[in-house]
Image (cartoon, rainbow, N blue to C red):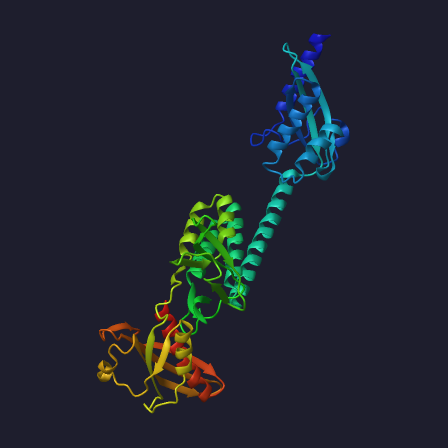
Amino acid sequence: MKKLNYFIYILLLILLSSCVTKNDDLYFDSTPNWVNRDYENEVYNFYIIKGEGETQAKASYDAIFTFYNNLSKTVLIEDEQGFINNLNTNFIYEPLEMKIEKNYVETNNDNIYNITYLVSSKKNLIEIKEIEKKEVEKENIDKLNTYENKSNDYYRNNKDLDSIKILINAYIFAKNNNYEKRANGYLNTIISRISDINIKVYLKDSLNKLELKLYRDENYIDPIVLNAQLIASYNNINVRYENYLVEEVLLPYKEGLYDFDIKNRNLNEKGVIIFKLNLLDQLKLLKSNKFLDAEEQIDNAINEKIFVYDKESIFNNKVIYINIIENDENQNQLENISLKFIKTQLESYGATVIIKEDLNIDELDSLKNKGDYFFLFRAEIVEKKEGYKAIVLSHGSLEVYDLKDLNIFYDSTLIDSLYIGDSIEECEKESILRVAKKIFHSFMR
């Protein structure tokens, strides 16, 4: 009887093997002639699967698990465990109208169970895969288009960091789904947008209070970048007076502007602070996805602003003489606009300020050893236009002389400032005042 069973098993394997196509070890291109006649008027696919194990249950699981691994190469099966469990327990998997029709079990001399299943499916799985591939392709393209549209919308609204974050997600998705051309395009755009973002540092109220502005480089007017974060890196001092590196996240106190108070932090008396755009989370995301080249390129594109600070003011207890000369476009002298600003700033650093409006540089020796420094600020209106809005362009310079030897201590060269407002009078004042602020803050750095 045992010999007869063995003969039937060999015959079954021969018959099953004869129905397998050359391109797929699982799929039968026609209904085997020994299958139940009820299938003659239906369109079915048939699969032969095998497994082995120390028990019949393990052999069954091995057969179905192997079947899943092979079938999933050509058919999208979202629920792996559901597929395996249902075929293994209930001998049916309804989403694919699949069921186990026949099985054959034997044991070898090592008491290892070998099991063979014949599986049928009423669905054309090759056709299903093609449909699913097209659906997945459409979904992927739609998702990438959504990423692009959202990123561009953020960029148009000056939310550059949000725009970059979206594009990094798009890059990762494109790389993971083999859209190489799109991924390369996203990476180029990311690097370009990051490279255009810069930081300006101004003194605010005092030498130790900084105001930072995040802006995008453009040809005419540089827009402020909104809804972003900065990283401030500096050496702090612990309770044992030892230095350690701090990377502090700065949030804007209003659109595009950030505060940084040096005195309120345990920094060294002298040192540097490095400010840059906060993309730490996005760089970690790229690294976790093994896109190390993209991570390096993006990290290298981030602009840094290095600010050198000294908590001790060089003007503390110093006597400073100042002269302010401001003219309109016809070289007519204007009423002093920036005098109050410059005087207030110097006094906030502990200086005693004396105004010398009529002093000429040729007469500078009259002040020798009578004070410490002489400030000469000159500004003039270059051009103005009036239309729907008034526009005024001014420029100016600052010269600082050491009164001990009368040598020049600082020369700013010419610095420009453009102001757009409702009236010419407003624009003239604000334009010249902004020249003074730019020059003074640059000098104090």
